[in-house]
Length: 192
Image 1 (cartoon, rainbow, N blue to C red):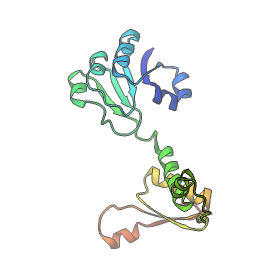
Image 2 (cartoon, rainbow, N blue to C red):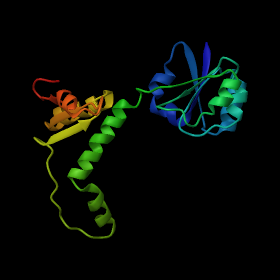
Image 3 (spheres, rainbow, N blue to C red):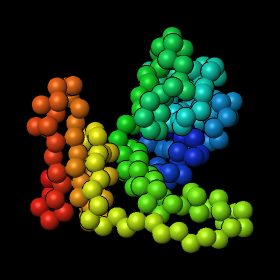
Image 4 (tube, helix red, strand yellow):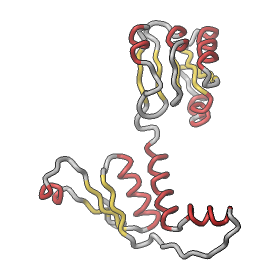
């Protein structure tokens, strides 16, 4: 059975999956590079799942040749790819794992703007209470530029959750006539 060391924050994000894995054992560990390296060595782990923190030295020395460093999320800026390559360690990420979260944050920001949450929160902290009328999202038009998985999911939440009319476009080139042909509209009742 393979042993995988997982930084605690990432472990907690998907604890049910990590704790019930059948083909490998996941061990949560602090994000401290020294602790990760120590746990890798003591458990004979060959894989590490990490977050956004920068790892500069000990991680690459601890994993065996052919081991894997997987970034929980998109990108892998915190991984020193030169050291990993030199140590024979494979690097990867999990690009779709955050799609739902990013779509939800997008909708949260739209709600915050519509209801003037930031201004109202600052006023409340300052002891000022001035009722402000926000806007309802129902029947409003939301335009989404970039209709990949995240944009489409945000469109679904807006359309199905708030009954907004969603217009989306993909910028595949800069030809405006062609762009007009690529615009789609999400109809709450009919779908895409």
